[in-house]
Image 1: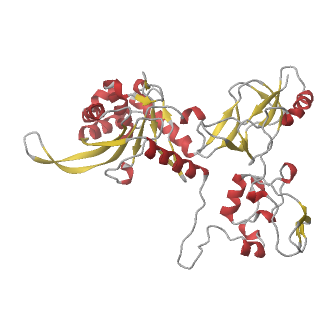
Image 2 (image 1 turned 90 degrees about the horizontal axis):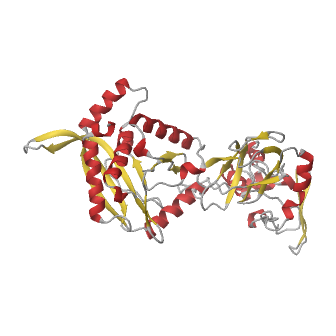
Image 3 (image 1 turned 180 degrees about the vertical axis):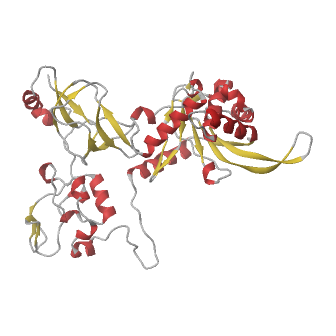
Length: 428
């Protein structure tokens, strides 16, 4: 029996997503877990894997189209069922109860009204006729997804000049990609300036918000307004850690970084102080057995926080491999849904940029985040009161006071410092 594949909620809370790439074609045999498509959300591009097996009978939406979560996107034929029968059975799906209808056009998708009586022709097709009174008589709607409209704004292309090749004349991503900004008619360019062009001489340039930037702004604003942050800082002497790292890298097949040591020490500190490995929930404080740590990874236009699972159970080199692999796929937009969710804590390291100290904002539902600065030579007072020079790294804990009281947070931070200053314990 034919089944319908619907647009998944690839990230928690997402209501819409755009299909970036189909990874399969009609007629392909699909197995459970096989990647079907790359789906673009406001946070990242993730692969969507098949949840059932069968033969792919047909694709219902094209690349570049943004639809609501739950919208049918493909048809899967069951065992022994012909493709023709599966497609025939799927025809009434769009109008069936409970199936989301096609999204209504937004204001920007509605026909443009021209003040003067005029008939506009684009690529030989009539678009609109207006009576002298300004009353609309005939129209041809020009639909485009939010993704396409954003691409058009960023490249200076007027959508009225684009012929859509998608279903029903919808303008899809490839229609924009095949055009150059210089193909915009002069009259259109004059009436619809690119948002990247400065509005006044010596003024400014407006860069339109991306979905990811809006998501970051919304989540961090919610975090600072809803989570009672407090901050604890500590200076860590890391000479021994730097020496150990050098010795490890002389023999290890996988090179480890200072950040790998920090993440390993964070996991060890949670095993030393297990009460701190928890998050706030409406009805309880949830305490975890294993330590799942999110790693802040800078990408073009924002950041992602993939989660390393059970970091407390990984060796230092295995941890380094996991972090490197997740960070690489994060920069390429290839992370999966499960890799972006969960965890109780995060690590953000700006030491590679020379930043000595900073405070980070907690990413819900985590109860804390560690901000790591650069290790640099600084004057310190030795055990016998002598002034010496040592490599010192400043770390700052941002903690959720609903979960971590001051004494508990201080106990955890002290455990972290002890682990970092005695790094051999991380190899045992």
